Image 1 (tube, rainbow, N blue to C red):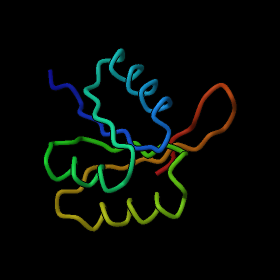
Image 2: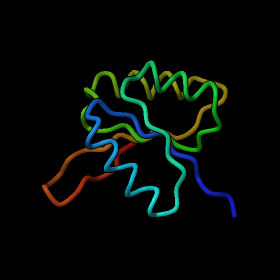
Image 3: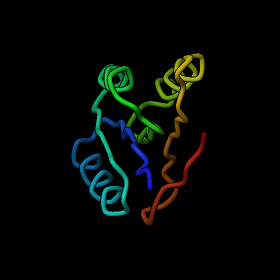
Image 4: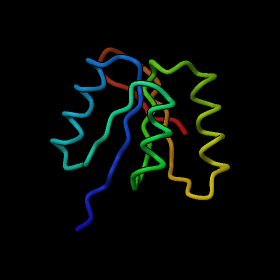
Length: 93
């Protein structure tokens, strides 16, 4: 069984570590990036199956990152989290 490799990107280290902990407990392999340049570097050097963009990344930067990744030959899905309530987030492409 192949374990999905995720890249979690956001600007809040505590939130990122918590999210990564939960994802690892669910069986995913997770790398973290605390800025978009770091994320691009990890994407070039590792085989990432999907990218999760935290709501702490501004919407315009989320859009440009997703557009840049979509135009790439080695594109993997990118998702941006959208805060809904204190109980969780919803995922939007």
